[in-house]
Length: 205
Picture 1 (spheres, rainbow, N blue to C red):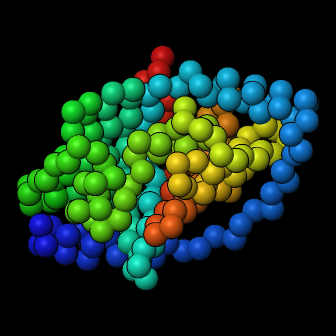
Picture 2: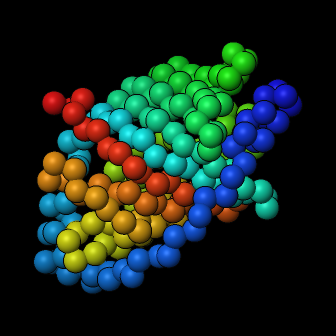
């Protein structure tokens, strides 16, 4: 376990270059803005599967970790491959309905009932995989939406849910649908940055 964590942390240590925050214009929750927000949610609620490529950066307990990732998601499964800044695969995470398994580059593997427990044990920080698929698409999960705001086009700019504060700093258009490309997530102990470089929704068709 210690060896696995040491290998993963040493290969993932790399602080992502900070990007300047874009100016946000949050819209008051009036009837017109609510309609735009609901319209945008309707356009992405049908998405149940996706593939994305991007970069992930994590800061926790004064340490920084980052690398690139390839993520394939559907309603029942997740497969995430993590790569070092030099491009070598350092770990893979596979989630099914029964368990989550992490395997390192040497073939060592550990499993847990959920991704939060698994990544805490293996990496030293919790990956909120239970909510991350929805949050990555720019929509709340089905649990209680504590607080949210959106821009003039009805796209989320901030969201508070399940102990996380989420900020959307940029969107890109993908076949007429606007999807996040820069997301900041913050909990009490973890700051997580997800930069999406490529969305693929073709598996939904």
